Length: 423
Image 1: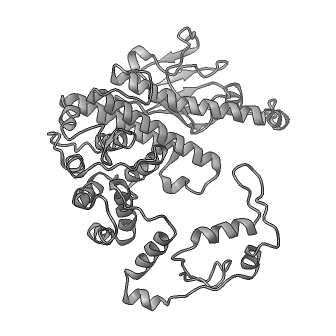
Image 2: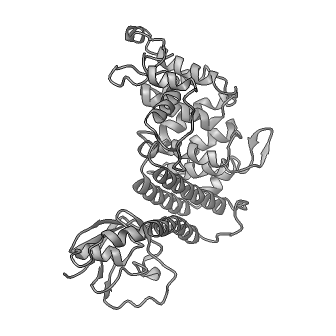
Image 3: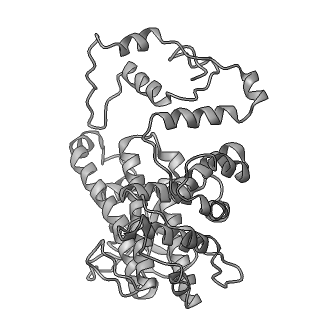
C-alpha cells in the first residue's frame, strides 16, 4: 500500500508505506545504474518489470485526511507490510532498541515508541523498560548514533543471542559512582562485546554477567580513562565517516570506509572490555597488556586501512596524474601533496610510524606546533612518542603557506598543529 500512482512522478507529493526498495530498484534499472562491480544488470526486455518501469503500475492511495484522523495508521501499515515479507522471528534487545530509535525519530515520544513495539512478538518483553531507559540515556542523542553503531557492528557477528532481563537491567541502570559521568561509551562497549560471543545458554549470551560490571568500573580512575579513550576514538570515527545517515546510499567506497571505521571502533570496544574484565578474547591471538597497547592498535587499524586505500588510488590513477599535473606552474601546496602521496586532505594519519630513525633535520617540534620547512617532506611521524603518546592527526586544511593538522589525542584535549613552509 502506497501513496503514489506512478513510479517516476517525483513531484506528486505522495509517500510510500511499502515497496520502496522495489521502486528504488526500478529507478536504478531505468537510469542504467551499475552494480558495485561496475556492471549493468542484465534484464531482458521481455521481462514484465519493463512494463512497470515504462508505463507504471497501480497503487492504493490513502487520503492525507485519513492520516489526520488516525496519525498512527501510516506507521502501523508500514510495519505490517515489512513484517509480511520476512520470516517470522521474535526480536531481541538490540532490535527493540533499533526500532525504538527509529520510531522515536518520527514520533519524538519514547513512550509511544515503546507502546508500538510492545504490540509485536518480543523475546525480551520483560526487558522493555530497561531498553527504553538505555535508549533515552545512552543512545547518543539526536539520530541515536550509538544504537546505529551497535546495529551495524552486530551484523558482522550475526548477533541473535539475548542479553536477558538481569543483564539488560544492569547495563541500563548500573551506578558507576561518578558524580558527573554516566559512562555511555563504556556501556556501548559492553553491549558491543556481548554481540560478539557465541558462548550461550538457552539462547542467552554468557560472556559477561551482571557481576562483571562492578569489575569493569573499578578502579574508577581506570574506568574514566577507558571512557575517555572510547569517547575520543568515537569522535575520530564520526569526524572521518560521519553518522550512518550521512553515508548510507553513497558510493561503495564511502560506505566501505564507514563500515571499516565502525569495525575498528568495535574492535577497540572488544579489546577494552576483555582487558578490563580480565576475559580471554577468542577473536584474536594477541593479548593486550595495557590500555596504551589497545589505543595503539586502534590507531594502526585506522591508519592501515587508509594506507591501503591510498596505495590503491595511487596505482589506479598514477598515469592520469602524470598527464594532468603541471609541476612547473604548480603551487607550493600542490607540490607538497605530490611529494607526500600518502597524505590527502581530510585523511587521518597515525602520528607514530615504525621508522624510529627518522632524521628530524629542518623540523622544529613542541607540544602545540610542528613546523616542516621546504625542501622537506612531511615527517614519517608527527610527534615524539615518548612525550606525546599515540596520537592521530587529520589534515584539515592546506594552502600555499601552511598545512593544518588537527590532533585528536586519546589523553588530552583536541589541539591543532601546523606544518609551515616558505615560498
